[in-house]
Amino acid sequence: MNFQRDTPKRTQAAADRADVHDFDFLLGDWRVHHRYLRVKENSREWLDVDGTASHRELMGGRANVEEHTLNAPNDAYRAVALRSYDSKTGQWAIWWLDGRTPHGDLDPPVQGRFEKGVGTFYGDTTINGKPTRVRFLWSQITATSARWEQAYSSDAGKTWEMNWTMDFTKVP
Image 1 (cartoon, helix red, strand yellow):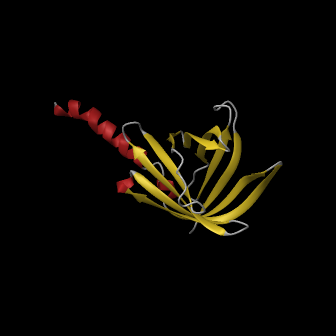
Image 2 (cartoon, one colour):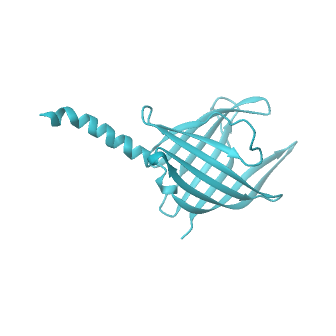
């Protein structure tokens, strides 16, 4: 008889634990191919850069950290993605810390979730003094590969311009 009362709680708890594992596919070490748009004055140029990433979970899976090394043309640098899961909203928050500006302000996190194998995360930032919407997408996830994309919108999400992709390949 208590089983009927306890079942919804157990079902919800199991669902919460499942969401905590959304980023488990990233655990371990990766080779990462970055492709990003560099905009200078009136020129736009796509750059291709290789790097590495190492991903581990924190706080029993309710958070994780991913450390990147990017072999940029001018100099290699490091960056960190930090994610935390809120079981009340069922959403992840993601922050990015760029090693080239280690004392700079962190943008507010992008927030979102995975649905049908795709993670979609939205946030707001300011670029060149203009309010800008930002979107992260995680897709094409397999045991040995994944794809991340970033896009900006200057019209509150009506249109998007992709400006950075990362293609992950698992290190054996």
